[in-house]
Image (cartoon, rainbow, N blue to C red):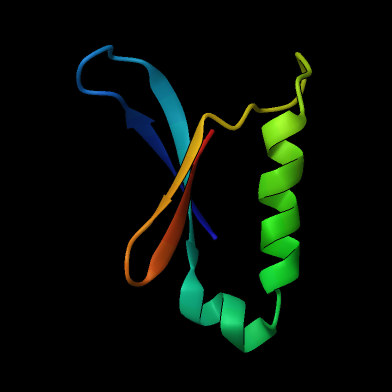
Length: 66
């Protein structure tokens, strides 16, 4: 995965954008691991762990907003 620092245009909120290639996910056969990461991050709430704010995708990548 690639990780980028991002900022919301309206609120100026800083976040991390993690992009994961769908092609790599299929090649490495880690679909279940990615799904599990998203599910766990959705429910996880701890001051020392990054929170998941949202998930979206396009034709080639899945993006996690953290």
